[in-house]
Image 1 (cartoon, rainbow, N blue to C red):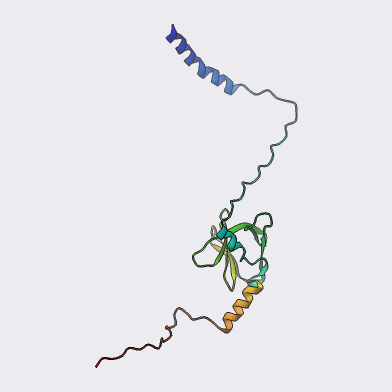
Image 2 (cartoon, helix red, strand yellow):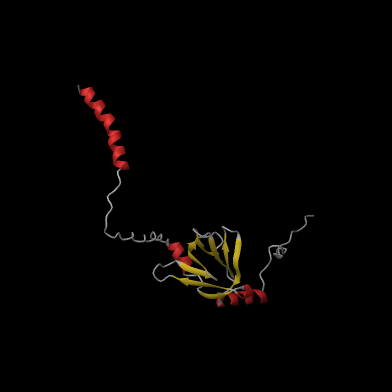
Length: 171
Protein backbone atom coordinates (compact mmCIF):
# COMPACT_ATOMS: atom_id res chain seq x y z
CA UNK A 1 0.00 0.00 0.00
CA UNK A 2 2.83 2.35 0.83
CA UNK A 3 4.44 1.67 -2.57
CA UNK A 4 1.17 2.36 -4.36
CA UNK A 5 0.72 5.70 -2.57
CA UNK A 6 4.34 6.72 -3.42
CA UNK A 7 3.86 5.80 -7.11
CA UNK A 8 0.64 7.80 -7.37
CA UNK A 9 2.29 10.78 -5.68
CA UNK A 10 5.30 10.65 -8.01
CA UNK A 11 3.02 10.40 -11.08
CA UNK A 12 0.84 13.32 -9.91
CA UNK A 13 3.64 15.80 -9.27
CA UNK A 14 4.60 16.37 -12.95
CA UNK A 15 0.90 16.87 -13.88
CA UNK A 16 0.45 19.39 -11.06
CA UNK A 17 3.67 21.26 -12.04
CA UNK A 18 2.54 21.38 -15.67
CA UNK A 19 -0.85 22.76 -14.67
CA UNK A 20 0.82 25.47 -12.59
CA UNK A 21 3.09 26.46 -15.48
CA UNK A 22 0.29 26.75 -18.04
CA UNK A 23 -2.32 28.51 -15.90
CA UNK A 24 -2.45 32.17 -16.95
CA UNK A 25 -1.95 34.77 -14.26
CA UNK A 26 -5.03 36.82 -13.41
CA UNK A 27 -5.15 40.15 -15.19
CA UNK A 28 -5.04 43.11 -12.87
CA UNK A 29 -6.68 46.39 -13.75
CA UNK A 30 -4.25 48.38 -11.65
CA UNK A 31 -1.50 50.20 -13.47
CA UNK A 32 1.88 48.54 -13.02
CA UNK A 33 4.86 50.80 -12.57
CA UNK A 34 7.87 50.09 -14.74
CA UNK A 35 10.79 48.64 -12.83
CA UNK A 36 13.38 51.12 -11.60
CA UNK A 37 16.46 51.49 -13.75
CA UNK A 38 19.27 49.50 -12.21
CA UNK A 39 22.15 51.56 -10.97
CA UNK A 40 25.53 50.68 -12.46
CA UNK A 41 27.75 48.50 -10.32
CA UNK A 42 29.97 50.40 -7.97
CA UNK A 43 33.34 51.20 -9.43
CA UNK A 44 36.26 49.28 -8.08
CA UNK A 45 38.32 50.95 -5.40
CA UNK A 46 41.69 52.02 -6.73
CA UNK A 47 44.99 50.99 -5.19
CA UNK A 48 47.36 53.58 -3.69
CA UNK A 49 49.61 53.11 -6.74
CA UNK A 50 46.70 53.87 -9.11
CA UNK A 51 45.75 56.96 -7.08
CA UNK A 52 49.38 58.15 -7.29
CA UNK A 53 49.23 57.78 -11.08
CA UNK A 54 45.94 59.70 -11.17
CA UNK A 55 47.58 62.68 -9.46
CA UNK A 56 49.95 63.06 -12.44
CA UNK A 57 47.27 63.03 -15.16
CA UNK A 58 47.02 66.30 -17.11
CA UNK A 59 43.42 67.52 -17.15
CA UNK A 60 41.62 70.11 -19.22
CA UNK A 61 40.98 70.70 -22.90
CA UNK A 62 44.12 69.39 -24.62
CA UNK A 63 44.67 70.51 -28.22
CA UNK A 64 45.76 67.75 -30.61
CA UNK A 65 47.00 67.46 -34.18
CA UNK A 66 44.81 68.50 -37.09
CA UNK A 67 42.74 70.91 -34.98
CA UNK A 68 41.06 68.31 -32.79
CA UNK A 69 41.09 68.26 -29.00
CA UNK A 70 40.49 65.90 -26.11
CA UNK A 71 38.80 66.83 -22.85
CA UNK A 72 40.14 65.10 -19.73
CA UNK A 73 38.28 65.80 -16.49
CA UNK A 74 38.72 64.24 -13.07
CA UNK A 75 35.60 62.91 -11.39
CA UNK A 76 35.24 64.73 -8.04
CA UNK A 77 32.92 62.01 -6.71
CA UNK A 78 35.24 59.11 -7.62
CA UNK A 79 38.90 59.97 -7.01
CA UNK A 80 41.22 58.47 -9.61
CA UNK A 81 38.53 58.16 -12.29
CA UNK A 82 38.48 60.39 -15.37
CA UNK A 83 36.00 61.30 -18.09
CA UNK A 84 37.76 61.52 -21.44
CA UNK A 85 35.96 62.89 -24.48
CA UNK A 86 36.95 63.32 -28.11
CA UNK A 87 34.30 64.77 -30.40
CA UNK A 88 31.06 63.06 -29.31
CA UNK A 89 32.71 59.92 -27.91
CA UNK A 90 32.94 59.67 -24.11
CA UNK A 91 35.01 57.24 -22.08
CA UNK A 92 35.18 56.48 -18.36
CA UNK A 93 38.81 55.74 -17.50
CA UNK A 94 40.94 54.72 -14.56
CA UNK A 95 44.74 54.49 -14.16
CA UNK A 96 46.65 51.33 -14.97
CA UNK A 97 50.18 50.66 -13.74
CA UNK A 98 52.83 50.35 -16.46
CA UNK A 99 56.38 49.07 -16.47
CA UNK A 100 57.63 52.06 -18.51
CA UNK A 101 56.38 54.84 -16.26
CA UNK A 102 54.03 56.20 -18.92
CA UNK A 103 50.67 57.28 -17.57
CA UNK A 104 47.95 55.00 -18.89
CA UNK A 105 44.21 55.37 -18.42
CA UNK A 106 41.87 52.65 -19.65
CA UNK A 107 38.20 52.09 -20.30
CA UNK A 108 38.26 48.30 -20.53
CA UNK A 109 34.60 48.02 -21.56
CA UNK A 110 35.07 50.32 -24.58
CA UNK A 111 38.66 49.24 -25.29
CA UNK A 112 39.93 52.83 -25.08
CA UNK A 113 43.38 53.80 -23.82
CA UNK A 114 44.78 57.25 -23.01
CA UNK A 115 48.58 57.31 -23.01
CA UNK A 116 50.31 60.31 -21.51
CA UNK A 117 54.04 60.75 -22.08
CA UNK A 118 56.22 63.64 -20.95
CA UNK A 119 55.85 65.49 -24.25
CA UNK A 120 52.51 64.33 -25.69
CA UNK A 121 49.39 62.23 -25.17
CA UNK A 122 47.28 60.06 -27.44
CA UNK A 123 43.87 58.37 -27.36
CA UNK A 124 43.48 54.94 -28.93
CA UNK A 125 40.67 52.45 -29.31
CA UNK A 126 42.11 48.94 -29.17
CA UNK A 127 38.84 47.28 -30.19
CA UNK A 128 38.83 48.97 -33.58
CA UNK A 129 42.63 49.26 -33.77
CA UNK A 130 42.59 52.99 -34.39
CA UNK A 131 44.26 56.06 -32.92
CA UNK A 132 41.49 58.57 -32.22
CA UNK A 133 43.70 61.52 -31.27
CA UNK A 134 47.46 62.07 -31.40
CA UNK A 135 49.96 64.76 -30.49
CA UNK A 136 47.68 66.07 -27.74
CA UNK A 137 49.52 68.26 -25.24
CA UNK A 138 48.91 70.21 -22.08
CA UNK A 139 50.98 73.37 -21.44
CA UNK A 140 53.42 71.30 -19.33
CA UNK A 141 53.82 68.76 -22.14
CA UNK A 142 54.38 71.55 -24.68
CA UNK A 143 57.23 72.87 -22.51
CA UNK A 144 58.85 69.41 -22.43
CA UNK A 145 58.43 69.05 -26.20
CA UNK A 146 60.13 72.42 -26.79
CA UNK A 147 62.99 71.48 -24.45
CA UNK A 148 63.47 68.21 -26.34
CA UNK A 149 63.65 70.09 -29.64
CA UNK A 150 66.41 72.34 -28.28
CA UNK A 151 68.31 69.60 -26.50
CA UNK A 152 67.39 66.18 -27.86
CA UNK A 153 68.39 63.18 -25.80
CA UNK A 154 70.83 60.58 -27.06
CA UNK A 155 69.43 58.12 -29.57
CA UNK A 156 69.63 54.42 -28.88
CA UNK A 157 71.26 54.18 -32.31
CA UNK A 158 74.11 56.54 -31.37
CA UNK A 159 77.46 55.04 -30.43
CA UNK A 160 78.11 55.09 -26.69
CA UNK A 161 80.28 57.98 -25.50
CA UNK A 162 83.93 57.20 -24.89
CA UNK A 163 84.53 56.51 -21.23
CA UNK A 164 88.17 57.64 -21.23
CA UNK A 165 89.38 54.23 -20.17
CA UNK A 166 91.51 52.73 -22.88
CA UNK A 167 93.21 49.40 -23.11
CA UNK A 168 96.93 49.22 -22.82
CA UNK A 169 99.00 47.00 -25.01
CA UNK A 170 101.29 44.52 -23.31
CA UNK A 171 104.92 44.34 -24.26
